[in-house]
Image (cartoon, rainbow, N blue to C red):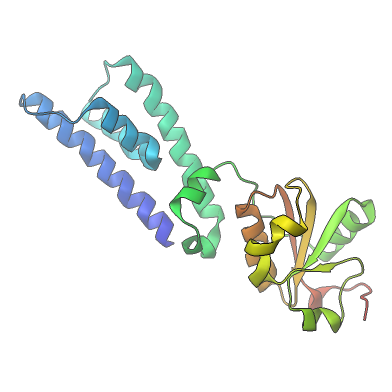
Amino acid sequence: MSELMLLFVLWNIMVFFIYAIDKNKAVNGKWRISENALLLCSFLSGGVGAFLGMTFFRHKTKKMKFRILLPLAFVLSLGICIAIHRSGPNAADYNLISIIAGAGMAPYIRISPSEALAKIEAGNILIVDVRSQAEFETGHIEGAIVLPDSDIRDKAAQIIPSKDQIILVYCRSGARSQAAARTLIDMGYQHVYDFGGIINWPYEIVR
């Protein structure tokens, strides 16, 4: 389990017990947790724990705003969970704010060389080689630009200004292209396709 997924699970467990504590306080006539605080916990990615807490402890079920807002918080939290899962082994590289903001981000997509070639032939695409300049000069796919994976966060916005640009990403073996594609998706690019390494490219290259 990634660090972010673990954080997500622990936070929702905590929110679940926050609702349990507030229910106990209500039964015993003690000082209560404010409704705004409960809703804030719910919408700060704690919607799963909040919804389960409301249902399990039958807490706030007569409050119309909780009956309406907690299912929405639940759906939002599920979206965050899916986004964390899609971010794969590199999830620890992302902070929680970026995951929340990117709950609706484009999915990571890996395609075959033949699928990549079909997109290239269709036109209106940008081929990005994420190897080093030296590796690029030993041979690359025609029309590709070089943007090393280590420079993507700093330079992608300048080199690729449109977030709707269709981007095909490759490297030498496929490891760096996967990480680079995920970084581009995290930055908000909507049409990113990883087609692996040039060592598996069966078509012509430029030397």
